[in-house]
Image 1 (cartoon, rainbow, N blue to C red):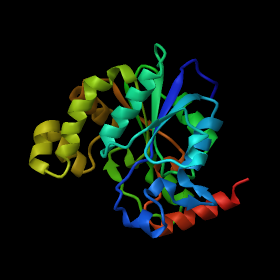
Image 2 (cartoon, helix red, strand yellow):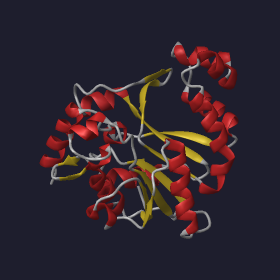
Image 3 (spheres, rainbow, N blue to C red):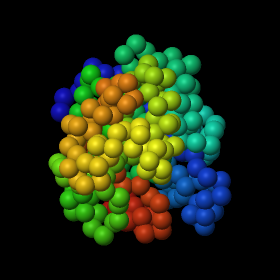
Image 4 (tube, rainbow, N blue to C red):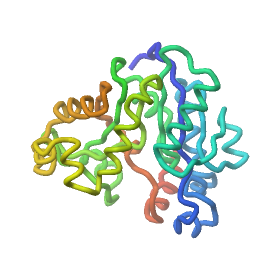
Length: 259
C-alpha cells in the first residue's frame, strides 16, 4: 500500500504491576523489560515503530533501560492504570508539540514479534475519517501463524477475532471518548451494568455470535461519541502478546530465526 500523507506519533505502554510474578521471575521490574533474544521485549516493539518509516515521535510510558531511552523521544512515568498511562502519553506528546491532523498510534510494549512492515501496513490501512481504529485478527490467521498459542476470541457473525495490541486515535478526540471508555471498562465484569451501557439487544447478539462488525462499530461509535472502526489485519503478531513463559519461548524462537 502506498505511503499516506498522515503524520503519526506513538505512545508505547511499557508500564505494569510492580508485583507481577512473571516479571519478577525474570529479574526485572515490569514485563516489557524481560529479555527476548538478548534485548528487552520493548526494544523489539520500538524497533518496529522506528523502522516503519511512519512514526515521527515516540512517548514511552513506564520504566526504561539505556537501550529504550536511546529509541524514544519522551519518557513518561507510569501512573498505574492502562487508560491513565494512555492519557499521560498523549498529553506528553501534546506538550512536545502535536501537529494539526497528526494521529497517534498506541502500542503495548509486550508484542516483540511485531515488524516494521506490519506497523506500516496497519497505519497505511487505517480509515482516515475514523477517530478511533482498533485492529483485529481472525482466529484462523492466529492459529496458522502461531499453532498452539492460546488467545481469547470474540465470536461475531463475520468470524472469530482476537483484539490487537495496537490502536489508533485522533488525539483531539481523546477527552471526548475517554470518560465513557473508562465507564465501559469498569463495567466489563458486571453483566447487568454492561448491558445497561451497551444495550441488552447488542449484548445478546454478541454472546450468541450474531453481531456483525458493522453493527458493533456503529454501537461503539454511538457509545463513545466518535467514529470508531475495526481494521481486520492479516498480521497475527499484532494480537500476540507475551504473558507467560510459553509465549516467551515462542517469541525468542521467532526472533532468533528472523533475518
